[in-house]
Image 1 (cartoon, rainbow, N blue to C red):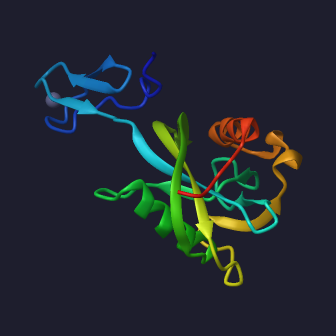
Image 2 (image 1 turned 90 degrees about the vertical axis):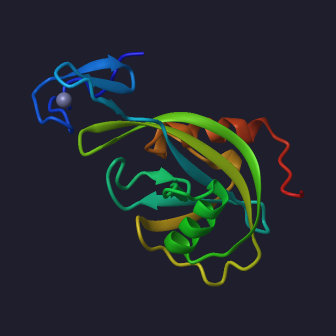
Length: 179
Ligand SMILES: [Zn+2]
């Protein structure tokens, strides 16, 4: 795999020399002081939330990348955080909903371009239960939300690749949230 940021990082964070060269697809080596700089894969959570009618909760992205396109709620883990805690936090921040249980569904490798840096991501999708939808409100990096039937979802309206793969997996069904 090619390093997707080969044109970006030139200066060594340790010695300051313009001596950083690509080591492999995720690391850079300083040819002057031997410092090694890693751009490791980041973890993110995707929340799959069905309402009582069996419709799936879909969000609209407020910011780039893929601003205005559809997505699933979720986001990047903070340092020291579990994926489960990340999803509980993100779904509270983005939609003011309280997750009551989570069940692992699948993981999808992804790349995410933010302000010219290409990040390698691993997305963890969880089936999440929410008992009370009355408090729902779009905020943070979500501009709107919709409940949609899985069969009616148009994957071309999703801006990033991993939701499309997750939708394919969901359609392979059957889905059970019970632990
Ligand atoms: Zn150096």
